[in-house]
Length: 221
Image (cartoon, rainbow, N blue to C red; front, side):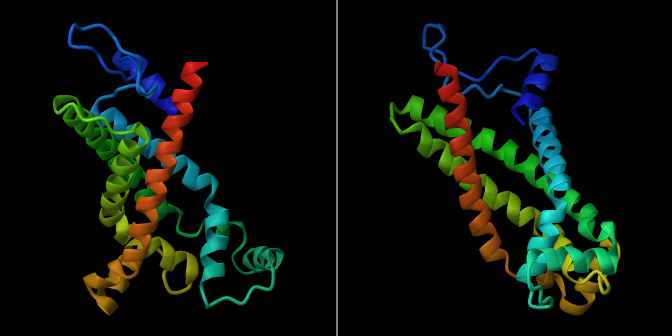
């Protein structure tokens, strides 16, 4: 993801993020993540997430089916063999479209909010002369952004999960949306959302805190 940001930063002619003193001289950069426009930030997150989601799709399908009580797989290889036998290679990519539609907006919205919240926190700290560990800034920004993006993209996550667990009943994205709405109403798209947003919020906060810590550590070398 950082490589995508660096490329877009060169296109836009922007530099890596940092702070400046009141006299205009540059301080040590807090982060090596380039500052991008809102559009480029969302594009970066969307491309990175969608690409990773496609590559990891077979593992996601196996995970979802293992967690479901509809399948009684004795082992990982048994699950792989069963999916190949019943659905072929395409079985490992069930729900690929709703997954991409979920992942791309999720990452784009998340990264956009993350950068804006982080900037707001830093500006507030600077104006009020408050010193807060950088890890706490990235952790709180990541958690709030992750929770918000999860709520917005929850319907697509529900459709993706249904298609991967019961491909015979939920054959396509549009049909799955219609079926869930008819049988369960709008609340059907938000079943289990509390656990998802909690997990996503914590995961996002920790992952970006570590991500930026690694970048800052590399910049010091």
